[in-house]
Length: 403
Image 1 (cartoon, rainbow, N blue to C red):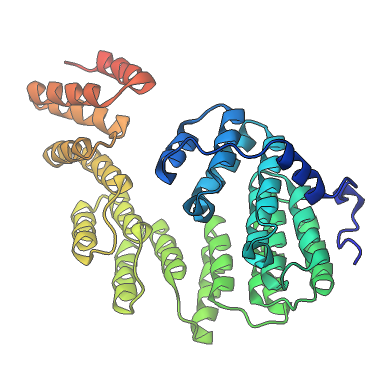
Image 2 (cartoon, rainbow, N blue to C red):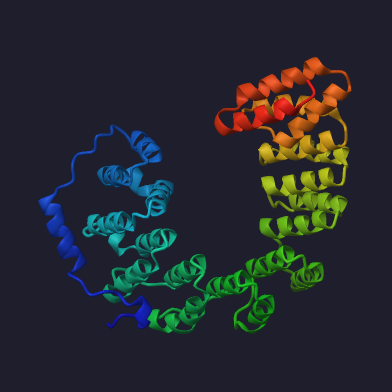
């Protein structure tokens, strides 16, 4: 089978057979035994290592751990660190070695293994190598190729903002791979239009794409209109969703909540939060935090606190630093210094770093109310919590405070 990529810009350079070359290399330099007693030790070494050469060596030495091979985050972290160091040669070497190790393993006959390699190359910005990997899979047919492979290569183009190539790929690649695009791959084309900020083209694509849109399709459109501040466009899409009887998911509710909070309709947003819980859609931290932050921005601290209480009682997610930062900023702004002082202590207790502008306002507010001792305690606690540049920045703020 000829190469599926005819674009001369993306041509795959002719070279020696990958497997034969790498086999010779491995025979000459057999893998050294891993110096790490466990996967945990290997993971810790990769996270802390700053030298690209040593990182690649650690990766290679530890790639025989079964847990290591299954742990996707450590793969992504390693490739990202090497790419940031501009050592794409090391990235290519490591991923080619992964193919070699899998030569006689079941993984080689798994489409997911090849897609994983494609996405790792993509994350490093190595688009030609990602395409080469798909080309190798499609020509040698190590496994059956499905729409997942089409979606992988569309995602490569999408993540690397190669929109023209993405649109051309969608026109030609399904036939070459022998797959039929479903709404999943159509949605990736839709995302490309949105990333290009071609909202009208995105809307037209949904109307003519030839498959039934799903809730994810409409979520992409809702997100585009929300980002552009087009409330009318957002509401029209939402009416279409309701008319079609599509059930909203977490993303749908979060987008609707954001739209209402942006227009200061926080009470309606709170009702939506209650609705999603009643319908069995589990909120995430963004669901609660958007409503809390919305109430804080309009100065309704009482309602914001009630949402925090609900967040704690519902038990789906725990409050994060953003939750507390929104509240303390609003408390200082509204002059509720007792509450802000209590909140600042809670933030420091959780080993977070409170927002400087809020803490500066808190200290000034306490001093103005003749509570200098409490203000000094806040300053000292901040100094104990900070280090490096953050500490120096706080010292500058401290020097200007009326203590």
